[in-house]
Image (cartoon, rainbow, N blue to C red; front, side):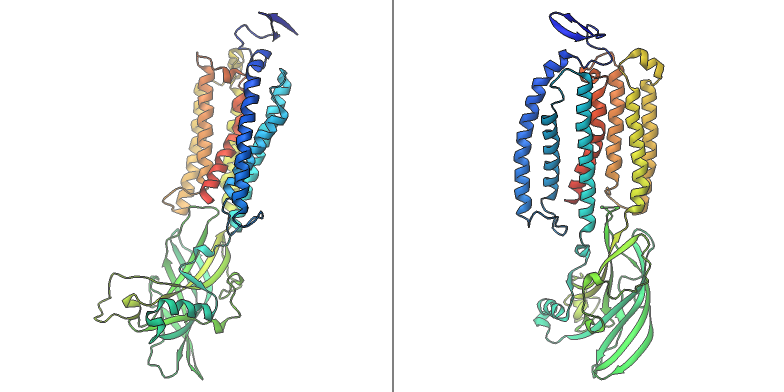
Length: 471
């Protein structure tokens, strides 16, 4: 099976230069094995320190469980754990300990597969963390869920702790929500208001962000012992700025901003909590149970107050109330989570299929010139193939940007950017293999190293992007 050259054994069929088709020989293995083992042990020691620090940091933020509402330290803990496990696997398996080609391929293959699975698991776990977190943070202003909370906010934010202000209980019931585009949403339903008896106040609710702010239809009025109840139906198209940066794991807040009819009086709208059961934001109160959400899943409903400052007094000589920027404005918030199945099953499956084809191309790139002629996969053909794959991804990426209207990068695009990088690396690999100058790390194992690094590299890039985007 082998002979000797210069007192050192070598595998049969190996050329003097060591550029045969399977140069996993004793010569490079002996030279690399000690350095590789030492490097792994040093990195494993550093990874252990990093992991211990990450565990301590994560525990200091509230325990070892998955706290979806406060995932501080999760990203660092996830990355340090994956790096530690990969290095530990290299230390245990010792793939270069023996100069056996089959053993080397097998053990490096197991480590590559483990790294890929760990990165995939980290991505999926991150998705669970992100999607499981409530969307209350998207609500505008200060959420209130009871009369006591509303009184506390108004006592703090109204001039003179609210002395001299009339409070009008106002309620909302939503019957439909429909996204008309990336920044337009149509909302319809009922709004009502209670005006205390004896007060010369014109009942009414203005939706200042709607296309027609005063377009409400009066549908009922009832005289009650303590005042008058009036209800209106509204159908408003509202233009709002949504953040699609986390697409397809994004969460949006559709809100109704409400003013009293005469916004130059000391009148403040308050949530009519008496018209609902005890308010719990995740019970989706004030929403029609038969409402169709399309690609969205409802998460919460809630009233809130926002202090808006205006650079105008609207022409009033004595601005008061909202026109004087002194009255907190009442908002009704509807928190929505996008159903990620459509985008994930659409673009991601197609991109993973492209990634698989690009990976298969690595097996057509060979250091053997005779085999290269048989395969017929030249450097030019590799580059043409790469350009074709890039065009498919570019079209998909443009479709994502058209669907979201995002001004910056959205999360799903990181999968395409990682794929761009891998396609570029495969193209460079083909050029380096066919170049006159030999690159020993590529010839080792017949271009084995790029094949081992492909999937961990791709999913590792996506995992890092996921951690940076969400944690």
